[in-house]
Image (cartoon, rainbow, N blue to C red):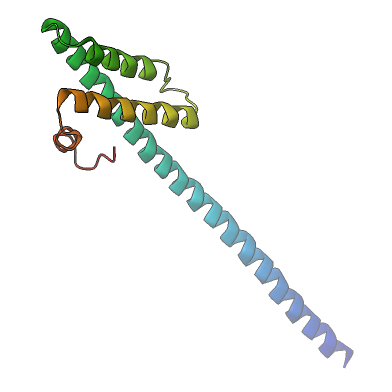
Amino acid sequence: MGENIEFLDMIAMAEDKFQKEGFSEGFSTGEHRGFGDAFLLGVKQASSCAAEIGFYRGFCLECRKRLSNHNMSDTKLKICQDILDTLEPIDLSNCDFDNMLESLQTCQAKFKRLCALMKISTQSSRNSMNADMSF
């Protein structure tokens, strides 16, 4: 009878052991996959932010050049310069994501104001770019 109890204890302990091993293996696999997914999401968001920064910078540089050639409104030139000044301190190699998002939100508002002053639809300027752009 004592041997049967030991045998049942071994079965119960083996089940517990396999459950712990399975949990540990599943946890490490999930953690590894989670890090990979998080990395890919970070790359996607960073490329989207970089594209938005590049769009605003390029648009404002060209706009500033054209406006200064035609002696246009100082307000429009000032907004272009404000956008460029807001984007300038962003360090793309090592930036604080929260500060970058605040700067981008400020640039979005200024860009919409600039487009309104220039009577340019913000939708048409976005449609000329890649349709995947979210800004």
